[in-house]
Amino acid sequence: MNRAISSAALVSLVGALAAAPAQVMTAVAATYLLASIVLGALAFRRPPSRSEQIASHLLDIGAVSVLVALTEGLASPFFVLFVFALLTSTLRWTWRGTIATAVLLLVGYSALAFLVHADEEPDSSNLARTVNRAAFLLVGGTLLAYMGAYRDRSRQRLAQLVAWPGPDRSSGAAPANAAVNRAGVDGPELLAPPAEPAQLGLL
Image (cartoon, rainbow, N blue to C red; front, top):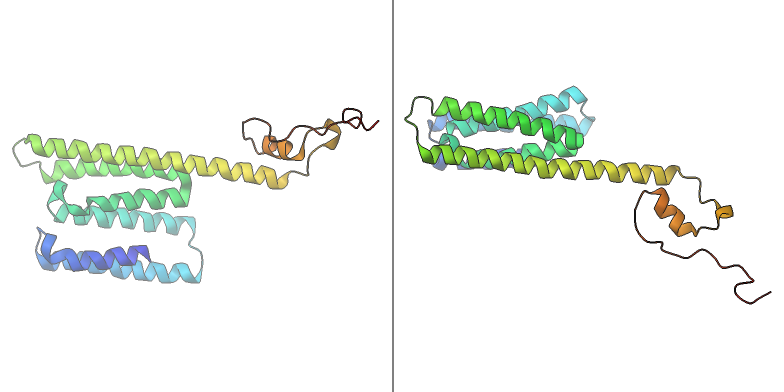
């Protein structure tokens, strides 16, 4: 659904932003929109396989790369759509997918910068823009990779807690503290161990 909305927005912005002929940009955006609708309809019918997810992810990156190349090159406003590729890779494959996507985007963007400006004179502004946007991809990928790793760790803790049969009451530890320790959370004890009757003056 998000991909379809983004594609519809691209079609509406084609006339104002395209450096290439309007017909070419319209064809690219319309093709991407149609592919997004088809893939979205298939995803509603059944969960996509791993190979289909990879193909869809590569389609997103390829379509955005073409749009960037056809709209002012390195200054293209469509560059920000690369962030969505990083985000979807995090949601699909956690930190591993984020790192792989970030590397792919950095290599692709560097190649795109070389191809777009290979026949131009060296320009400090173009170089600064290329470095800044490459750094943006690197920092964004690092932050999302950290988020994916934290999400993985949280899932592991919850899985361990669900599989835990319960506290060992013979140890005298409070159940709440035992649950926190089982989940792998560091911190002070939540509750003190239960006091013996003699300590309470009952015996």
